[in-house]
Structures are given as structure tokens and as C-alpha cells.
Length: 162
Image (tube, helix red, strand yellow):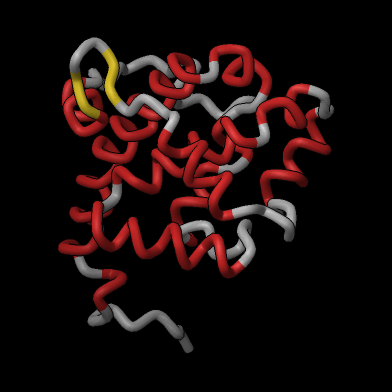
């Protein structure tokens, strides 16, 4: 007996179409984030791949990685300012901990970014977030994302680095 219910939304063509339509959008956001990472933190961009942290941070809005008091502050601004703030916060976290991350090996950095220190100071975090430039060549993050071309070949911005 099959547990697959063909009338469920998961098996519907509508949901499949929605998911397929999201892929280009997510790819553009990923590329825009990569460009801003290289612009704001060029040395760190070479050391720490977004694949280590960004998906989990965005999907959970930092709930798993960050102490609750700091996460609540991030959520407040996210609800006020929208999705772009999550990308801004991600860059701010890297900025805040860039010196520590530069001294870590790959595994240590991955573990560190998965669970940020419990003593994360929300004031220091928000100061770091505010130091991040979310524009490049006069374009906002949203404009960068909308004009990022999707290429048929994989490049460093979207390839999972192993």
C-alpha cells in the first residue's frame, strides 16, 4: 500500500511550479550576497564559503545559531525592514567575528558559524551590521539581485565548494 496521496499539495503541479520558479530567485540572491561579501570582507570571502552557514542562518532567521536575546533583536528588525536585513545581519556577523574566523581551520569555522558564542553582544552585533555596505556600484541589494544573470555554467557564487 502506498502512503503517497496524489491529492496532496506536495504532489501537485502548482507547488512544483512554485519551487521551480523560486530557484532562479534564490540563485540571484545568493550571487548578490556573494558580491557584497567580497566587497565588504574580501579576505574572509576567500576563507569562509557561504555554503557553510548562510542557508541555515536564513531558513531559521538565526534562531539555531545565535543566542535568543540577539536573535530576538535581529527578528525585530527583520520584521520591520524585510528579507534584505537577514543578508545584512549575516555579513554583520562575519564582520564582527572576522579576526577569529581568519585564525580558524575549515572545520572550526564551520562549527563556530553553526553555533555562535553565547556571549554574543547584541550591541556589538548591531554596530557591526551597521558598518556593512549593502550597496555596490550604486545599486541596493535588491537591485543587485535582480540584475544578477543566471548562467548555464556553475560559477564560484553558486557552486557548493567541497
